[in-house]
Image (cartoon, rainbow, N blue to C red; front, top):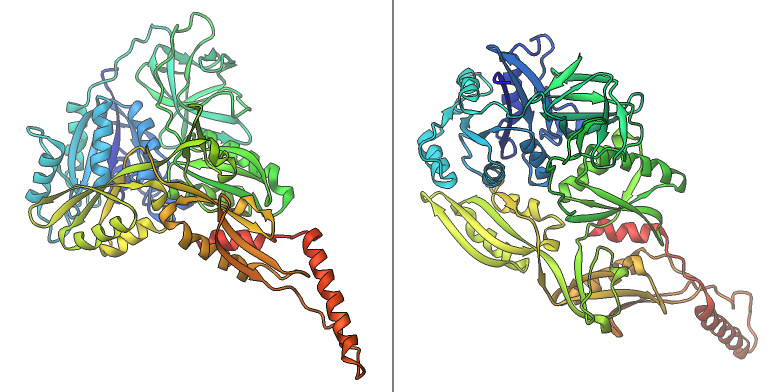
Length: 590
């Protein structure tokens, strides 16, 4: 056990985590040069196309008589749950900082997470081979921001290999060996999982106490279910079978688990007989932040979508889903950690499961406090209670930290203020970079927010936001009526100051998208009983006097009056059909 080192690589997005992992694989001869390809551990096509790590990846390496269990983690703020799971399975972390960009928003966030877990942190400056860099300046940033005083900050180039071998030596020297006793009752932490259609669920485990062997009967301490271990091994980087895994080791196991709901990530495995008395702490279950509804393009695919969502939720427990029935048909309300997380899950559904999916407009969760003192959380406007029952409506706010060059500060501050932002502070470093700290309603970050920040800063700004908190706001529910019929899927919750503008936009969009009927349709937006926007869709008109030639004009008037009375009656009893293109047109238009 003294020869084992469990560690992960954490950094801001695009600071070179995957490149450093590639260099480790080559340096330790875990993979042959003939098999090598860039971003070797990023196995999904989506990861390689976007150039980002979406899933944390595990690999076992051997070097200088030591065993290294490395976890390469994502860098985007939406995938911080993956990072938290990786940190729970390690004793140390390499904190990577880009030599050109310096300390960024997610650098600071990941450092705080690792520090709270009690991990030993090795800071390293990457990309020292780039021209025009100021290593002393970046080193000062690391020491000032992260409060690292005496620690040696390594300088490396993951691309060329400069300093990488020295970094691996520092992992041996600075990161402690795992604790735990081999002869104690088994405690194995499930930190990731993957569904295989042929072999069932593959669990990635970190053995904290005891030993687990092939043929042994194990028990899930979360569900109480028992299984027989069929295969055990390590990922190096492909599956390599072993007879057992001991305390301190990281590996995988198959136990003929076919139902993906039987064992969850964060669960503790122990032996069926003489097992442990209490489970490991596991992970903090974060609440979903962003909600979208997924609908199949055809009703026959509902079951396929459900099965696909179940399999993905096993692999990524940070998103949730439940079935719902609306005017659009049967769909699934899904919760995500952020808008990029939602986009990635949708693309995975379409690519990995060959599904054709239509998604709704993203929304957040609101908190309703009634006069009776009840607290309700709603994600769908149709679940909002009657206004007479509501004492207060709260919406999620987030503390946003933006790192940007000083020259772009003014434009970004104006943009944040336009989003109902609340200024907290601005810190300036060395007359070239500043940190902007604001509080924002999370709903204002749902569409085009990240793109606008990048545009205003010419791509140089980065941001990170913390766990949302709730704050009372002057929010209203805007209902959409077609004649006298309320169309719930078109209702929305918005701040009162924006309600009139948004209502007018939605009403005009419905007017342009809605096909005309045989009778006129009044499109109205209302807050409670007050109409705040209206537009009219004219009825289809048939020329009922076409067959008349000459004669008394009263004949023509009688026919027109009869048509008018018919349309009035039809308006009272006629059924308005809202085609799906109206809903999707509004969602996409947002």
